[in-house]
Each structure stands twice: as C-alpha cells, then as structure tokens.
Image 1 (cartoon, rainbow, N blue to C red):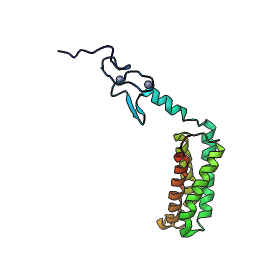
Image 2 (tube, protein in one colour):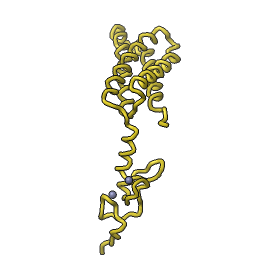
Image 3 (cartoon, protein in one colour):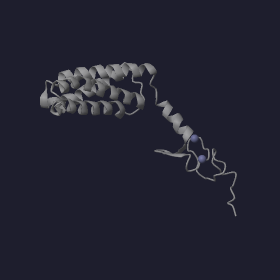
Image 4 (cartoon, protein in one colour):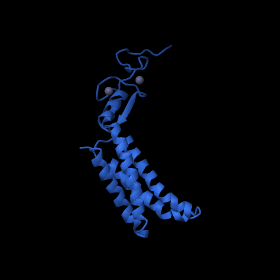
Length: 169
Ligand SMILES: [Zn+2]
Ligand SMILES: [Zn+2]
C-alpha cells in the first residue's frame, strides 16, 4: 500500500512530497525542507535569497577601501591607546566607533554582512600588528599583551556592533 499524493498540493521542487504550506511571498507550495522560517512567516529558499541580495549592496571596491582603512586606523589607534593604561577601556570603544563611522562614509553606507566581517577582521589584524612588536621585545611575556588585548576586544566589538547594529530604514 503506497500513500496517494494529491498532485495539486506538492512542493514545487519535490513533486513527490505533498504539502499545504505556501511561501508567503511567491505563494508557491513548499515542503518542510524547502521552507525557511523568517520573522514574517515561511518562505521558499529563492525568495529568501532574493531578499538577502537586496540588502547586500557592497561593491568590490568597498572591500578594499574598508579593509585598508580599518587596518590602518586600528594600528594607529593602538599606538595612541597604549599611552592610556587603564583608560584604554574608555578609549578603545571610541576608536572602534570612530573607525566604523569613517569606513561607513568611505563606502558610502553600502553594506553587506561579509563586508562588515572583512572590516572587523582587518581591524583585528591592524591592532595585533601594532601589539606584536611589544610582545616580541618583552621576550614573549604574555603580560605585554594584556592592554593590547583589552584594546582589541573593546575596539573590535564596538566597531562590529556599530557597523552591523544599525538598522536599515
Ligand atoms: Zn517564494
Ligand atoms: Zn521541497
């Protein structure tokens, strides 16, 4: 005995699966595997992909520009921050926000998650490049990495939050 499938209610990609679920954007029938839960209801994978593309406005040159600016500023920020000792915990987030604002202006507020990740990665590399010589000169004393580590953590987390936390109008 095999299950009879109502051909009027099958997934648009899997004609052997019966379903009553529809994508709330294009109204096609979708099976459980093809359905993606979004804040506004279930959607097919194609509609979800199209939706993401609309918010991914970054151009290739934005990656170059963003990465270079973030790395250089994170490096310079580290040079300044090392003179502040404990106050680094106040200075570092300000530097992170400053970098985020400058980068956002440079890339004309275009955005994509991958761009933000690349910028954040570049800021980590720039900050570590500044801290590394001290680590080497101190004979690999991990304590020499304490304040640079604090700087990287606070700077990078506020940079990433500033970049990605701003909602699209
Ligand atoms: Zn759809
Ligand atoms: Zn399916």
